[in-house]
Image: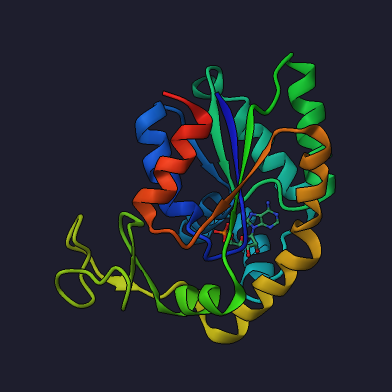
Length: 214
Ligand code: AMP
């Protein structure tokens, strides 16, 4: 099962991804996570990506495509994968299709999660993530049991560098300009499903499993 999660930053892709990979037992490929891991480890790739990420801009296509296809070439992707945050431009989608075609593979479903701008801003600026395990919380919607502490592993919760008001607003704008055209791209391919991202995370997950199947 080859899946793509599409939708603006703050739509809940990461939260749904965690549930999807557990149910379907496929790897979660988040280009954002790969970049953040590289930034944490101080790699050259991390340094290059950070310049763009801190401003809420997209990392250049060539770099992202290379990272994503390298990851997709790993053995654990043979029987399926969930892409989260990739592709983000029509160029990336075309490159992904070429890559899959060469392997005789294709994308089965594109899950497009929709949430309005005001709600996205509330979600992004209130988001707190665990420094260690990456678990995601929200100061109002999903508060941790103890303020500032991860329920899962007990480490410290922090705000992502790009979740401040200005960068979050810019990320939404970049999404509308660069990534939204992908909806049309997959509409033509005929494998896109539109989902309301405000129905609650369990309902949203139920709607996703209805599409993907048991
Ligand atoms: P995310 O965790 O998916 O919100 O990604 C965080 C940031 O990483 C984005 O704002 C971009 O700067 C960068 N990034 C992640 N995935 C991509 C991609 N597919 N294309 C370009 N930039 C990306």
